[in-house]
Image (cartoon, rainbow over the protein chains, first blue to last red):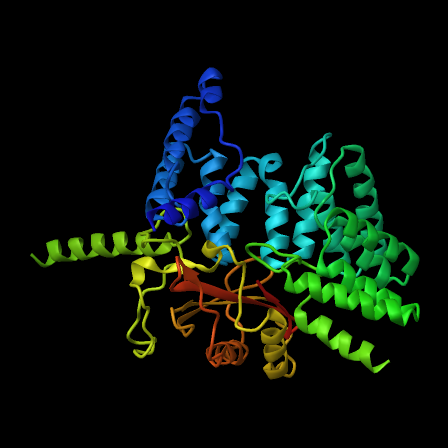
Amino acid sequence: MKYLTLVLILFSVSTVMAQPNCEAFKYYGDTEKYEACKKAMEIKGHYQFSKAYQTILDEAITIDPTYDYPYWAKSIAYLKSGDFVTWKKLIDKAVELNPIGHLGYRGWCRYQFFRDYRGAINDIEQLDSLVDYDIGHSQNGTYHLNIAKGLCYKAIGEKQKAIKIIADQIKRNKEGNFVGAYDYLHLGVLYFETENFEKAIEMFTKQAETNDLAENHYYLALTYRKLDRLTEFKSSLETAKERYVGGRRMSDPYSNPMDKIYLEDIENALTLANMN
Amino acid sequence: MKKNLLVILLLFFTFWSCQTDKNDGETQQYLRWVGDITYNEQTDTSDFRVCNGDDNVLQYFNLGEGPVYTDEKATILRTFKEQYKALPNNKENGLIRIRFIVNCKGKAGRFRVLQSDYQYQQKEFDSEIVSQLLNTTQAIEQWKILYRNDIPVDYYMYLIFKISDGQLTEMLP
């Protein structure tokens, strides 16, 4: 029991972004930030939700209210408990003090936890305008932030813009030998929804080659149906069901990803396929 | 004597008002964990019990299964969409979170509501909107039972509803 609790705690703490280097503050003569940083590092080993964790960070803020890290670290438990009001106050403070350090994170969380599409787009685009280097990935590493931005554009109805953003980023990812876990799937669904069926099939095939899921077979099936290829419609659904039951499907520890399907989606489509 | 008492009372209320005004997540009195819901005999039904004590209630994501429901999310979302009736001429926007505890038997209790606009500023929706969502949530008879080391646990769960122009548009997580 104790070991599991420890694992839970480590799992939760491990999501923290890279630990700050307190010695750097000392080197530059910023004594208050150095002291606040040293205090904040006392959270090590405490669960993000716990009284001890939050209290230590309050003390760090008291030492130096202009240090961004404690506001950010405090905000995580509120985010994960769905307290969007307190989370936003805390993360806004962190962004105000260190926009480049936290805009990408805030934008991603707006999308992942609250489906705040416009807010996420604004944050990611603001970050992009502030730096001349790659803006990086979502906190959980699943997406490049540009892919997340593309998904947000899709959600507000700008599908062609979403396709361009995601396709361009996949191209850049390939140059860096990185393949996002769901990138081809999302692009394929966008092509399917805009009736570019051949491109959709191409993307679902690439998704199967890199991270084969129930979703790519399900949407592939829907594409075949549109093309009146009914035998492939049915066989793809059967594969989708097999993958789904076997646990090969989209997932996230905190939320349900965009384009995720459920067993009843597959079974409803299978009923249709069997009627043909 | 009366003057001294007045000064003491004044100091007490000044201190007390500072404590309550600072309920912003920065300087507050903490419970065991952020978001813990303590039993309120005025509002909570007495027939709901946590099985393993308040100090052992986990978060839904602590068990590594992601957000879980007895059926899949599609089913519960359909229930809300079918039962939610938008109010005529209501164009409100924002988020409504209903958070609660699911006990070791999959029963839910201690429901709490948090509301904000799309700028994350606290607000109050028309009470009819909130009561519809709350009633539907409370009417869900069975939640998923989660286990740790084969022992059923109590855990916190929440639903967030996105309301746009008075319509229920999305449900999270």
